Amino acid sequence: MTRWRRLLSAAGGRGTIAALGTVYVALAFAWASTQLIDGYPVSNVVLVSSFIGTPGLVLLYGSRRLVRTDVQAAFYPTIARWCFGGVGLLLAILALYQLEPAESVSDPVRAVLVLTAFGSVAGFGVGVHDALAKTRAHELRRRNQELRRMKARLDETVVQLESANREYEASNERLEQFAYAASHDLQEPLRMITNYLTLVERRYGDRLDADGREFIEFAVDGAERMRAMIDGLLEYSRVETQGDPFEPVDLEEVFAAVLKDLEVQIAESDATVEIEALPSVEGDASQLRQVFQNLLSNAIEYSGDDPPRVHVTAERTGSNWTVSVADEGIGIDPADQDRVFDLFQRLHGREEYEGTGLGLALCRRIVERHGGEIRVDSDPGEGSTFSVTLPAVADRGS
Image (tube, one colour):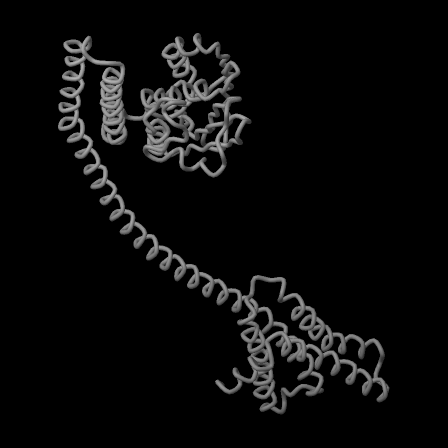
């Protein structure tokens, strides 16, 4: 039996079925020819030969249609074995039937041809169902194996993520500890330096020449800038740990508050700020106010020589909103567009523009806390567009 199965597999399941069908079609023509030569009635010959040839045609057609079914090619030999099984079964029945002479059929050859032809078709039908069942079982095993592999990869990923999360939390804790130490251990000496320099200026200012007074002014300014950097670093470190829980935030209210905070800067620079309709997002209102106040203030500050013009828009992108702050200012070189979001990165000298180099880094950290991203598209002299992606308010249907 094993050798027979190997032979069918080697011959190819579809080819074997087609060959069997061809045999029966050929036998039908051959039998019809001999019967007509012997003078048998045409109607009888046509009827019987159709009983032999039609199953052959069914096998030929079925072998061609197999490729359009769900049966995998690996199980075509299964169908062929069932076809030959049907032939063998009816041959065995006929053999037993011939053991009783009184009950023997009048034309054994005709009976063999007709019955085995129908037996092969019956075997084909059973074989198709058997092959389909094996195909589905094989597909189920394959999917189960794939699911097990996916589960193993997911389990491995979860372990990596848990480890990364622990490292991230530890890093945040160390950063906050450092910022706390910087805030408390460095602020006091800076205040002392500033106070004593101010005291020296008041007490001995009339004895100092212009250079001396300028030196004191530089020292006080440096201490103040150092204090601002320490405050900014402390704020940067506490984005995750001291932020408020997320809730629906109306961005129109956020920008109304930002415009109120910046009304002096807007008035002094004669800036025009156009804000289109804005949506609500999931987030921390106070942190988002920081983000957009920083972006709007930068758009006004880096406007160049012309009065600033700023345009704020919002666009839905899937489950997020993208809020863009576009200006017509000095722009940013493409080589610097990623660097501007790093800590303490400044593209201009302090004699040109003030700042600590922390504002955009703080913006990115806040936006990342919200599961979004911030990017800039710009060309020198053509203005800049800062785009912030934030999660839309989830549907709270009943």
